[in-house]
Length: 301
Image 1 (cartoon, rainbow, N blue to C red):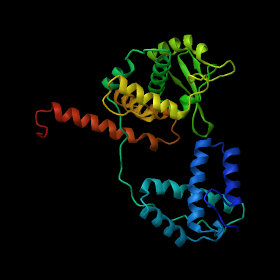
Image 2 (image 1 turned 120 degrees about the horizontal axis):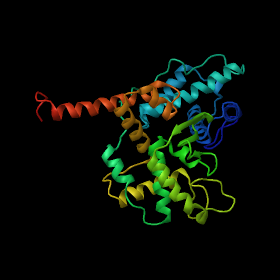
Image 3 (image 1 turned 60 degrees about the vertical axis):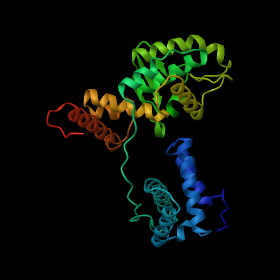
Image 4 (image 1 turned 45 degrees about the vertical axis):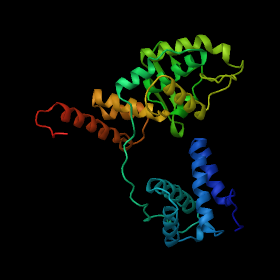
């Protein structure tokens, strides 16, 4: 096999990525993440073909990544990508065994997602917009919190077909091209109506995106994050808020109010209930704080 440079991949790796894009319909951002993980494999292999690598090689590679400062969680993700490549190679008859099987990442400390309190969220969203672009921002953040959207899902919404005001629902395409329909609250719909009255003055004539930049084109994920940072600084939230924090807050608040973990899973579009169970820990933290503050025999601070 030819030497692998800093941005080149072996042809079989490129073929696997093409398969994931065309047959598994993985999102471009997911494919780019897999590409980075495969580049790590190629660099660590130092020109050797993936098919000749053995389990001790993979263990050594994981150890080098850990020594280089990569977290256990990130190494687990890298190993998952490598494992998927080898499963595909075996099905194609290009490898005899999966050398990643049995290789585990260092145990990562469990971290809970940061969330806003309901009071912080309401204060942030109820702030008054000061110009047309802030009307757009308010509609974006109301919609993201109301429906528990990923930032990529918000950016992909179109002006036609995404929101049904009559049914008060939103149809969104999530990871792996999966479509779900979720309810949208009245404040988000009201903010969206105000923005739609302004949108045509900002959007280019052929632009179909629901949310556009001052140049009239679809908002990017980075632009949405930057506008959220600007909004929270201007309106006194008191801490940095990133887009996924609104999704975490949505999930935590709905679970605290309803106790229905399965419903939260459906609303978030999680394929597995395990992805949603982290919010049960957040809910317990809320209960523990209430207990400590209110129970006569709670531990003294």
